[in-house]
Length: 204
Image 1 (cartoon, rainbow, N blue to C red):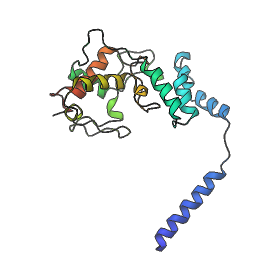
Image 2: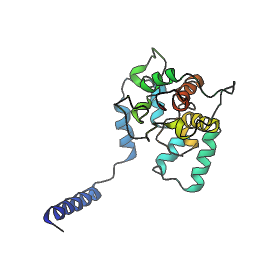
Image 3: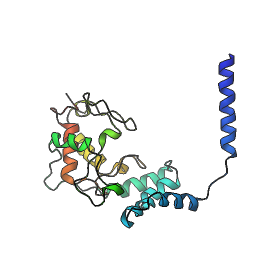
Image 4: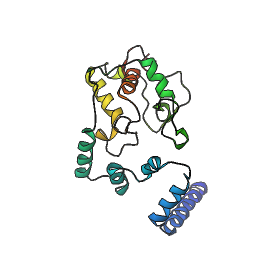
C-alpha cells in the first residue's frame, strides 16, 4: 500500500473510531429540537412530525423491515389506493409536466394554501433531456413509457406507485401522493400521462 492510501485508511479508521465513541442522544431531546425548529407551523402540520403507523414502523426498523412486516405494511398501504372512477389512468402530459416542475404545497410556509400542490418530481428524478436541474435520489425516468411498451398494465402500476409507493416498496423514500392527499386523482393521471404518453418529452 502506498503512503497516500495508507494515510486515507488511517483517517477512515480514526473517523470510524471517533463516531463509535459519540454518546447516544435521547429520542425526547431529538423530538423537542425538531418541534422547536417549526415555531410557526400549525397543529395539523406538526402532527406529521410523529408520523402515521407506516412511518413509525419504518423508523423503528430503520427502513430494513423483516419480510413478514414488509408484507403486512405493503398490504395495508395497497388497500388505500383509489383508482379513477372513469377507468382512465392517463390524463394530459402537459399538465403533468407542470406538476413535475412545481414544488408548491405542504410546507408550513404554504399555509394557508394559495394554489394547488405540485408533485416536485424533478427533485428526485430525471424525466426529460431538456431539463438540466434534477435530483438523483430516485432513478432516471427517461423513456419510461417506451421501455414499458406503453402497456396499459404498466400505466396502472405507475398510477399505483405514485398514489402510494409503499404498496410497491415498503419504506420507500417516495411520498404517498394519493394516500396522503398531496395530489388529486386528476393530478395523478396527468403525471402518469407525462410518463406513459408516446408524445411526452419523457419518451421523445
